Amino acid sequence: MTENINAQEEWHPTINPWLMVTPVMLAIFMFVLDETISNVALTYIAGSMSVSLNESTWVLTSYLIASGIAIPLVSAASKLFGRKNYFMICTIIFTISSFLCAISHSMIEIVLARFLQGLGGGGLLPLGQSIMLESFPKKDRPKSMAIFGIAVIFAPLIGPVLGGWITENWSWPWIYLINVPLGFVCVFLAKNLLQEPPYAKKQKNVHFDFKGMAFLSGWLICLQIVLDKGNDADWFGAAWVCWLTTFSVIFAILFFISQAKGKEPLIDLRVLKDRTYFFGTLVQVILMGVFLSSAALLPSMLQNLLGYTAYLSGLSMGSRGVGSFIGVALYLTLSKKLGDRRIVMIGLTLLGFGSVFFGMINLQINLTTIALPNILYGSGLFLALTPLIPLSFSTMKNDQMTNATGLQNLVKNIGGAIGTSLGTTMVSRFAQVHQNMLINHLHETNNVFVDRVNALSSTFAPLTDTFTAHSMAQSQIYSQLVQQAHLWAYIDTFRWFAFATFMLIPMLVFIKKPKTLQ
Image (cartoon, rainbow, N blue to C red; front, top):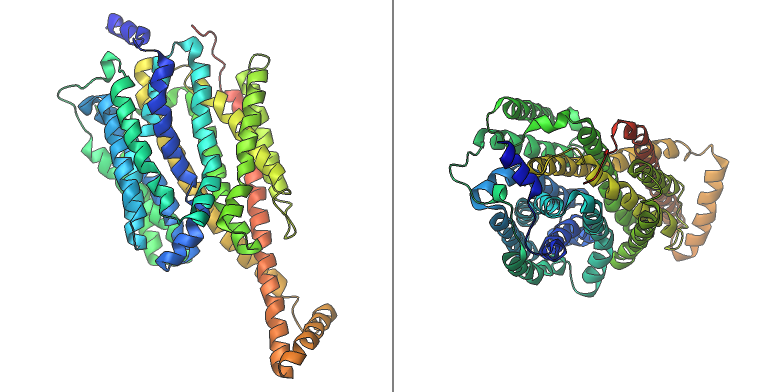
C-alpha cells in the first residue's frame, strides 16, 4: 500500500509537462470563455427569442448548473474511460453542443443546448486542473497554476469584448460557432500529447453512484429554477416556488448523506476536514459569485441605461483584461517577497475597491470612467485566485487531486450560478424600492416637480394640444425616475459586492502556509 502511494506521488510524465498543457489550456480557455461570452449578447438573444431580459439569464445559469452536475462525474468517469479518453469525450460533447446553441431558434432549444454544453464542459476544468497539478513536481506547481490562472481568469475577462465584437459584426450564433474548429483541434492535440498516471488509467469494475447523481441533479435543477424564476413569481408568495425550494433542500440533504455514508460516493467529503482546503474553497466560491454576477450586470446596465451597443458594453469590460496583465506583473514581482496569503489579501482588497468605485457611478459615466474599477477587478481577481488555488491544495496528495478539484469546482459553479441570479434579483428588488421612494416626490405640492412639468409642457406645446403636452411632460419625468431608480439599484448591488469581498479577508487566517515544497 505504501509503495503504491509513493508511486502515485512520484509519477512524472515522459513528455515535457509544458507541452502537455497545450490541449489542456485550450479546452479550459474555451470552457471558461463561454461563462461570460454570452453576457453582452443577452439582449440580442432575448429579442430574437421573444423573451424578457430576465428570462434570458437562463442562458448563463443553465450552463453553470449543468457544469456543476457534471463535475462530480469526473472521478468515476475517469476510471471508467481513462482520464485522457474522458477529457476528449468532454471536449467532443462541448464542441457539438456549441454548434447546437448556434442553430437554436427558441429559448427552450438554446437552454437545453447550453445545459448539454455545460455537461460536456463541466469536466474540463477539474480534469485540466488535476492534469496540471499532477504533471509538475510540487516545486513547479505555483508556476503551473499561474499559467492555469491566466486561462481561468483572462478568458472570462475577454469574453464580453469578444462576444460584443462578434455580435455586432456578425451575429450572436457565432459566439458559439467559434468553439467548433477549436474543439476539434483540442481533441487532436489531446490524443497526441496527453499522458496519464497509472491510477488515472481505465479501470475495471468501476462503481458509479447513481443514487448520489440523482440527488445531485434534483438538487441543482430545482435550485436553478427557483433562482431564475423566483423573482418573477414573487418568491415564496408563489406555492410552486415553496414546493421547489423544499424539494431542492431535501435533495441536497439526501445527497450529502449519501456521500457521507456511501462506500464509493461521487465525492469524498472527507477532504472538507482539511482546514486549508475548506476555507480556500469557500473564499473562491464567494469570489466566483461576485465576479460572474458583476460580469453579467455591468453590460446589461450599460446597454439598458446608457444605450451602449453590445460591442461598446463588451469593450468596457476589456479593461479587466488589462488589469489581469497588471496582476501578472504584480504577482511575478511580489510572489517571492510576500507570502501567498498576503498576495491574496492584496487581490481581495483591490476587488473590494473595484466594487466600491462601481458603487459611485452615475449616468454621466463613459468608457474611461469605468476603466479604473474594471482594472481593479481584473488585477484583483488574478492576484486573489492565482496563489489561492495551489494554496488550497497544498496539503492534498496526488491521488486526492481529482476528487478535491471536482468538489471545489462543483461548489464554485454553484456559487457562480447563485451569484448571477442573486445579483439580477437584487437589481430588480432595489429598483422597486428606489422607485417607490422617488415617486413619493412626484405630486402637485412639490414646487420643483410642478415647475419641471410646466417647463417640459411648454416645450411640447407647439407640437400638440395642451393636455397631450402635459401628459408627455409627466411621462418623460417618470421615465427619468425609472432610470434613476435602476441606477441606484445597480449602485446598491455593487456596494453589497464590496462588502462581501472585504468580509473574505479575515478568512485567510484559517488557510495554512505549506511548510515546504519539494
